[in-house]
Image (tube, rainbow, N blue to C red; front, side):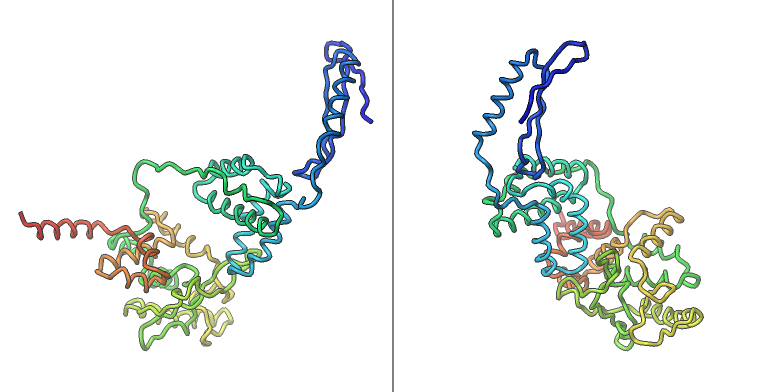
Length: 383
């Protein structure tokens, strides 16, 4: 039973207080207590205690079923989710939940989570990051949908929020690709004789448009020197606990055969001879077909970060326009368009599952193309 107690305030005056157990918080499952202070008389404190006790007694008890925590629903959902996506995807998703979503919702009973709490979390993420807030919140919605199907909740409150939108920034965004002259200048900054592997890797990226993971997964049996082609049928990515793993391409269109230009093929041949000699000194026989084209000093997969580290140093040392490793893919697409390739041809070479993906990502064209378009217009109108 709660009791009224006497105490002295900071001015030495006699006051009365009480502390009352309020039961279990329906959202967190933790015990709740309230403390009321500052009553001038014991009678006033006793009356307030009686009223509060009566309110608690009259309040209908919350149902005990379906008191499942958001974190428990997530665990059930995640078990099913891992059967629908690749390891690299479910591994990244787990990181999003552990780092962002579960700290906001994990310890709450999912049926007690309100629209206001969802909106508060979404607004917090919106202020913290530029883009990922939408992805994180879409996963929240998926967990609520799963809870709805399981009968843990009666409606998905996560769908009732207002999605914030980033305002467009003034000015032009830096383009993540190089023009023909910029690309040529880059290769002039890399010594093909002293850094043959590095030069060959960047040559492959620039002249094939393959992704970083596809490049680092290449083995020599993927190169058909007789027909001057490269077969793309796997990719290096990050799996559970940061372990690097080989996966199939994301879509069926990702499996493709790419024609190689003679110069790129020549650098690959030269690197293959050099690799055999160099790795033999390290104690490795690289004559087998499954030998990686680009391996580390232990003849294992290179770190996914290695190409970016190489690129960053070259850009810094030679004061080049910054682009990312993925920028080589953009550069390749832009060069294809400049050379007159059709959208369908670019789509096939890059391994996109549909033309719209190609259009969405590679809408940029080179300055030369813009100038050519204006000249073609002027020649056509001719007045």
